Image (cartoon, rainbow, N blue to C red; front, side):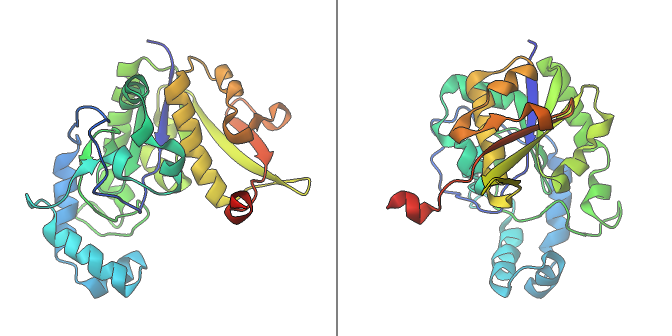
Length: 267
């Protein structure tokens, strides 16, 4: 069926107790051998070594050292990726409120890039982890995760796009993650999206709003199921409008008035 495909970055914030009963039948990640290899490498890391590798706090390093020790155990919590990821992108996506038709679209046409799992479908079941794609983790394949994954993510993504019959990929992932997918080697056009906030007459890029907005667009796509890139001009969630004069064939620019701070909205 003609239509679009999209990709997102993962999240560091997790809710492993999220209710997944309404999401649909869970699926298994498809690059499991590579995931096990990475988990095996990291199981030997002490908290101090993780603190240095990941540039995280002592507390987070201890938490993640425990996660790697428990990885694979039957008692380890598990949940579907799009339902347990709770970072800014996923506050926009809100997969846990999706209707069945929207979730089916997402399962067929939305992929989540991951440093540990490579490429995830929304309902793929994951265990708690923290491993950003830019981490310089040395393995037998090389000095970082980009080398470790090589072309595996790209090959699987290409196959998924072909299976969906998609005519273009809408890149809603960050540069750190989209780099791992080797988007310039895909068989379909890739369209990037910029989200800007209008503040005192000036259009500004603001990371927090950009992340949430990527999730908003992915959710809008799942709900409306656009068939062409041109149809994305109708995206209007939370006041966004396409800026045609600033957009190009391979980059769409959307802007909106900068939202009021949460405290002001509450008042």
